[in-house]
Length: 231
Image (cartoon, rainbow, N blue to C red; front, side):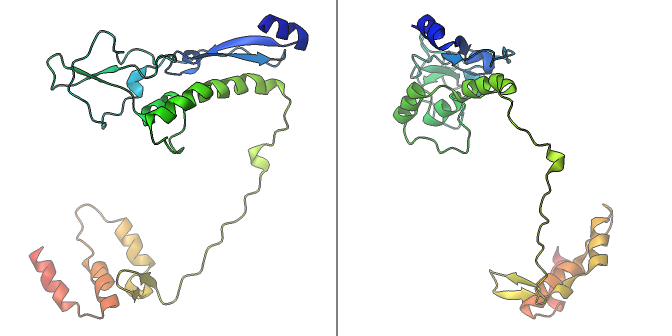
């Protein structure tokens, strides 16, 4: 079938394995590319299941079996629900086994962490059956992009708009929890510079903290001075 399509539509077929592009599964996928829109890919360092495991998940105290995958194996695309042997100090043979959770399956398919994780493992497995790994799709796009003659714009030619800086409120800083204003008079540029350049052996600038407390609360600083004596 692939040979017939290649002859009729002038395309070439390329088998891309997930492992070659740094994936953690045994998935392989055929891509149809019209020549010469393809450059061979450089093999990436091989990963394994070890980089998928989230050790915060509960580990059932069951001894591992011979059929379980180890952390050095790849996740089988045809058996993604297979048990994985994970180190555990509380078992006799220092191993236990469990299936990968939905978030781990999501990571095996190279889905970014900001994408919401499916609520169940079953939905994650369904996605894996209908969608190639993301790294495979991106690698094929990178292999073809140099031949597409797409327009490019140098970053140096872009003019970024100036950020609008809001003026300081003359009343100071609004302290939401206290529902009061902290006046700007609590410090000035000289105090801030002195604090930034303070040596490790210099004294603590207690006056700055005193003002931050006394100004919003309209309280005398004498009480704070006594409190500093206990610290």
